[in-house]
Amino acid sequence: MGDNQQTITEAQWRNTKLLWDYHLMGHQARPTDVAIGLGSHDLGVAQAAADLYHRGLFPTLVFTGGNSPTTRNRFPRGEAVHFREHALELGVPDEAILVEPNAANTGQNITLTRELLASVGVVPTTVMLISKPYMERRSFATARKLWPDVQIICASEPLQLDDYIKSIGDERLVVDMLVGDLQRVIEYPEQGFAIAQDVPEDVQAAYESLIRDGFTSRLINR
Image (tube, rainbow, N blue to C red):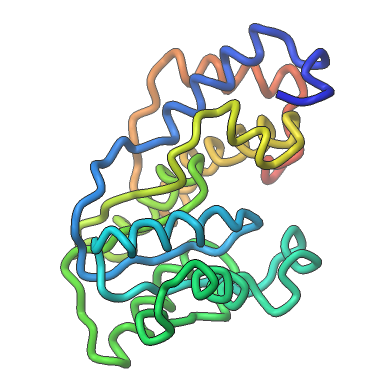
């Protein structure tokens, strides 16, 4: 898992795996009217989107996302723009891709993409949301809140936790991100940002344990 694995205990890895498994929605990929690739630091989203496009699962692919403090250096022209460029390199035709370059959070990813699709006459009934693996559940909850009349299918790169950690190169940061996303899954419904979802007791306990252990860099309002 990396050179610094010894700094994280086996119990902490077990707790992390519980969070990882919970974040994955377990949806079966199937044809949808459109797909939305959610911008982030993870270029694997564009890779997954290209793979799914080549499987013939959707005719139109929207990449959405501007810049954030964590992506500005890596994607100076914006997340969606760089994702599009990578998808083109992977053989997705230009005419299949739309770019929404302004969204600054997941809610804006959904609402601005919906507006962009409507502006070109696309009103989908089924949407595939393609995200980082650990963002599947939060993106699902956000889309169900803001776009309740479409059916949402979640997808991401088919990576195990160990492989994802290797792809990021910083195991402690990955644990922090999993903890931060679960906080948002838990707290965003009360703020009107997402639908509520059940959190199993063992996942809640793992989450609280990891916070006590200091995996808090991605928490909000702390």
